[in-house]
Image (cartoon, rainbow, N blue to C red):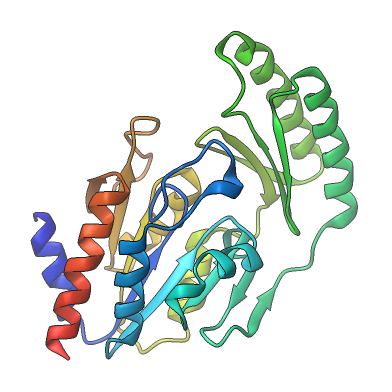
Length: 261
């Protein structure tokens, strides 16, 4: 099927869950994660879809729930999933799921991360409520072999403390194995009408459980490819070339869902 056929399939669904990652999907990847901004076209299309009959929109991200709420405030009443499913807020903003934070283990792992940064200053630490990440995008090429050695040692420390480490686009993130984006999709679908069609799009390894889950239940998994990560370990129904192509998909779908209304 070509892109338009997938759009038409989603447009025809009586009940639709349109779920999307943020970074690298509706926002370009930035050197510093704090600089990421959702594309205006994406916000407009997602807002239109959230108002269309029979349509539920969800933003599913590794960012904290408060961070993603601020970055997508223009969309309005949509589901927001933070920290890969450890935090879930309903369209009205109410937190309906909040995992217990493994604070002591994260504190210890943060100290390990600080040791890595002392060795490789260009590494960046991002501490979240339920996870911790090391960013290496700004590490110069000549320092990367040493950086990867430090990241490997940090991964071992994370594993000893019961975390899983996801290797994403210039990021290694340690988190609780109990939460991933596939489980988050299942949580959302359990609250929607039976037979709801899910369309999920993402660009990185953390999105693979959700793309796979969408496929398993008869939905549509969309992979947003990049030069940094052109392929995925799971089999999507549709691969699109970067955020612009996904935003075009969203705009076409919003037009059709609105026309159908």
